[in-house]
Length: 102
Image (cartoon, rainbow, N blue to C red; front, side, top):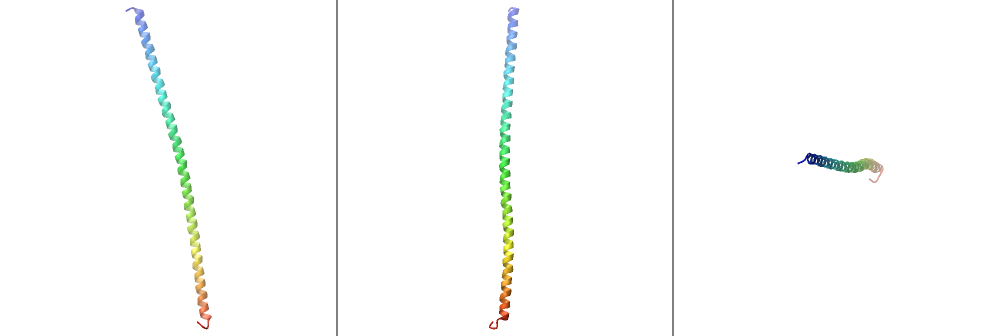
């Protein structure tokens, strides 16, 4: 083999190695870009779910506050009704005391 042939083979091999290295680098960069995109999608999904969870928690907190407020109002009405019953009972007793026919 002549020196020229050996030089051409070496140059060809270097070119092939450079092309393979470039293809591998591009493939690696593409995989990294794909992983970045997937990570971004996961972060967006996580943010969406976090916002949904916060909305549900806020709705539950509002419902619990409404229930506590209604329970307090019911307790107030119950106490008012008890006072009215006591007043009515006192009036009945007083009426029985002053009624000559009782």
